[in-house]
Amino acid sequence: MTEASGGGPVETNGRSWGRWFGRPGKSLTRRLIWLASAWIVLALVLTGWALTTQYQESALRRLGDVLADTIDEVVVASDATAEGVTVSPIMDALTLRALSGKYWAVAEFEPRGGLRVLARSPSLAGESLVVPVDLPARLRAADGETISYNAAGPLRRPLPEPLRIAASMKSLPGRDAPVVFMAGINRSNIDDDTREFATFTWTSLLILGLGLVIAVFLQVQIGLRPLYALRNEIAAVRKGRAARIAKVYPVEIQPLAEQVNRLLDHNQETVERQRTHVGNMAHALKTPLSVMLAEAGNQPGVLPDMVRKQTEVMKAQVDHHLRRARAAARAQSLGERTPIAEVLDEMAVMLERVFEEKGVEIDWRAPDALGFRGERQDLQEILGNLIENACKWSRRRVRVSAGPTGMGQMVVVVEDDGPGLPADQREAALQRGARMDETTPGSGLGLSIVVELTRAYGGRITLADSDLGGLKVLLELPAAEA
Image 1 (cartoon, rainbow, N blue to C red):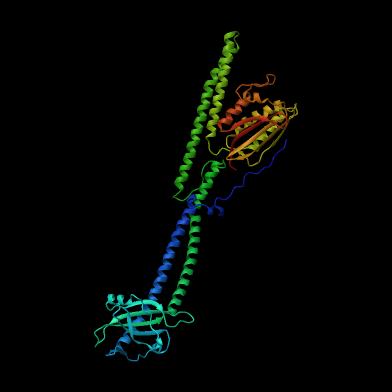
Image 2: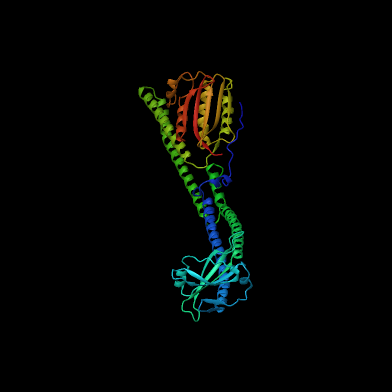
């Protein structure tokens, strides 16, 4: 006899990193983290946009105040003359130095709709401030309000000079037509400050966002830890490692744990009632049948023989249907798990002693972690009948192997080195009461019992040729998770 040492599948952690690459809808954890992360990103993007926009507008307002003061100084220093407008010297060093970055100009409306410059600051060095095509119309519509816009300044090298220009239409004493006063100032410092502020803001918000996402991840993981524990406990019950949920959980999910326990209790009570009912029925039927057999056995004649034969048929039918009912009730039970290796070892030791005179050797192999999803008594009856049948027909050698096949199933293969069974007789051999050789002891119910129990568990049995020379029996049964 050979004992096997196998290993079951390695259980993986349900919270492994690999599961984060699936779709959010597949996991409650991913869904919570995705939703929280999306809201965090949206909130931070809106916050960053609002802060940078507000900072830029605030800086431009301050720049507008400087331009408005410059326009007021030019207005005060301006006088209307017959030739146009003269501007007294303004004591502003920047407007006196050529291309200094601060400029002013005075213009009037042309009949064709444009503006004609009447006076300009020395800092313009003969250049003019850029005037948009629609500025005259906008100034007339603004009715004295200041209009601001961005444009390029007179300084072209090394880069075009960015200006912030303000224009306002005003009236001068002694002049009927309104006059346009314009002032411009280099906005490079404002643009640089805005970019620095935006860089600092977006960097800070990015760091904050990453921190918040990590915090959400940890919060969800810690918050859902009781659910993970409940899932593991339910899996333990399903695999047969525990009978019920024992831990105490937070108030939000404790009712769920209690309902699962009640469902388990109800299921167990249902199975027990079915077993009790089957047992009572067996007792109620077998006792009268046994009495009839005993009475018929003591009486000679055709009628007693007929009664005895029919009673035996009835008893076999009762055994058949009661066995199926018991197996069906057991198959409904959750948490039943029977190690295959233990049962094979037990059967091999027992049957080698039974067939000791014949010298039968049973070589079995099965992974230690492999388990049958059902009751031990049923597995013993299934394997016991198969291995005993193989021992009866074998010359000296019987080989048994078991292993998982995937999809919650396993296969047990029983082979012998006997004469085998012709293919045209295999189907008949699985019928209840069939005996292929009347010289061997037995009732012919062994394989039929195996078939009944196997089908009750949703399994399947197949007969084939063995490479040992005898019969090969392939048995498919539900496997319990490791």
